[in-house]
Image (cartoon, rainbow, N blue to C red; front, side, top):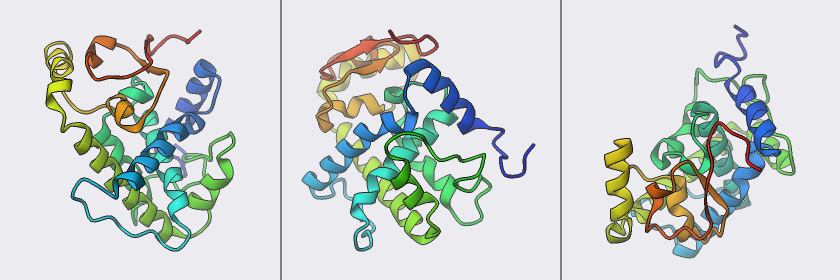
Length: 218
């Protein structure tokens, strides 16, 4: 195994499969969610009871880059899950495993952690391959607190989510908050692709669409 890629090509394999299926780079498709999350965070005034790490001067505009990357890396780790079906709590922590000091994961820009393609490649390189590791870790902490706050905020509406929670527990033995559950909070108007629409009944997703995670989307 390449010592620069102890993950065995996890990110590269996922990117190749994702692009073949959806016709776009996964990082590009994570950006609308990341930008909506940042707008919500700023509009709500950093909710959720968490103490946010203050971004350095000019760094607030870079937080979506960290959010999109933790989504992308989470999809690579869980290739059987659609973007909208990622576990919010797991996703919130994913980027931290990669950027922490003495991480076992590849360094950004190496074969094991390649830069994305698409229109956001330059900002990705600025954040992750720009040589400022402390800034990178600050942005990772911002994304962690934001996603934890969003998950907590989304879960505070049990009556609306009750039917979906019962269905998930009965049919999938899980009740965690998915990325898709945040769509009404974030104002995402879709389309939001999921494998089982009944798992989102009553959640209020405007443009919910069913798809097989293993099949191309027409």
